[in-house]
Amino acid sequence: MEQSFVTQKEFTLRPRARGFHLITDEIIRNLPRLPQAGILHLFIKHTSAGLSINENADPDVQTDMEAIFNHLVKEREPYYMHTCEGDDDMPAHAKSTLTGNSLSIPITDGRLNMGIWQGIYLCEFRNRGGGRKIVATVIGQ
Image (spheres, rainbow, N blue to C red):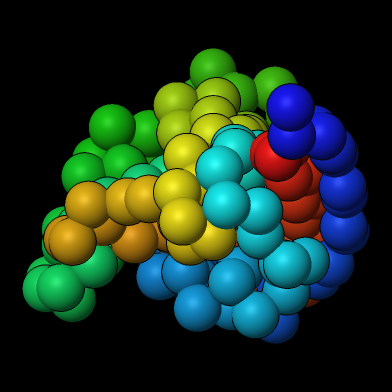
């Protein structure tokens, strides 16, 4: 019977401008050695950014996702009360709730088992969000 294990690593993504950014390669570079089979759980330690899996081939997807989210959650709405950090503050929190703060990705044969057109996205909802902290937990055997 194979032994199960859990390993965890926290790292900081390089800062990015507001928008949807493919970060698959940066995530993989920061991961510990992956097991033959298991699960990678990614968690972003912020309330104004999110994680998503989406199309990794056409950069228009990134532009369109930004436009869609800006249409769904507008800045400077008169009913916002939490505005102490600027016009992008409350909308960033709302958008983060829509995307979520974690992902689970299967690991097969020592690699992330995603579809050919899938990539991991940082969804940066602040104009200047800075480096975003990620906790990567690998569960496998």
